Image (cartoon, rainbow, N blue to C red; front, side, top):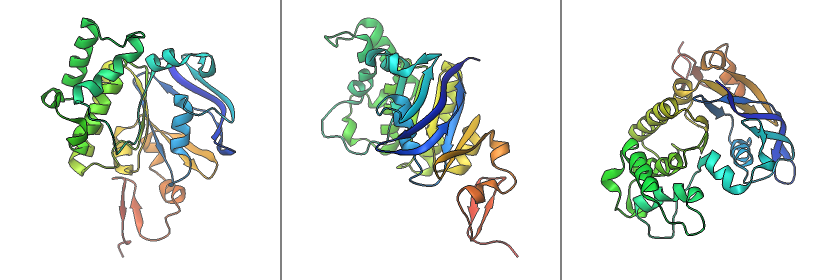
Length: 257
């Protein structure tokens, strides 16, 4: 597998760096989960990789090409994002929302071809959203909304998919279904995934590699078995009361005597 994304000595932030010296690689078909304390900079990292904000220093490479040298339209053909979105002002159908994923390919008029329409339908079939295609996107459930946004993202036929806390507003059932679907699509379609997650048990199950942020640096990168061992998670999150079960990835409110 080739590297889809590689960062070299990357520092991210706004006025100043919140995370420095980030050196990671994610290959086609891999899922890399970002974990770490709240406010450590996971969202800032995702926005930097997507090109929404510029690096403080260092580089992001996509298939060996410097992100800064890739124009916005070509970036949209390469990178798709599912960011944390909760409110939408405009009335739009789910099918129209998914169709937006084809806009980088439609030219100035934004008119979808028959081929574009076929891709939209295929992506809605893959995400089980055909039955709600004409429903108002603002009126569907959170679980349905995330599947529609995922359909829009894969409609771009990306090589890299970025997701920022995609399960935050979902019930447990929909968290599981969404991450199972993400795992299957990444494997079947061959795109790389970088996803930030709060649910450590799910990060443990879904990830090929886990990138751990703490303070102003990448504290550790490894496979789930490497990260969830030796009491590392307790150290990463400064857990001083209760306990953490590395086998399941779940916390305990108290230690058994």
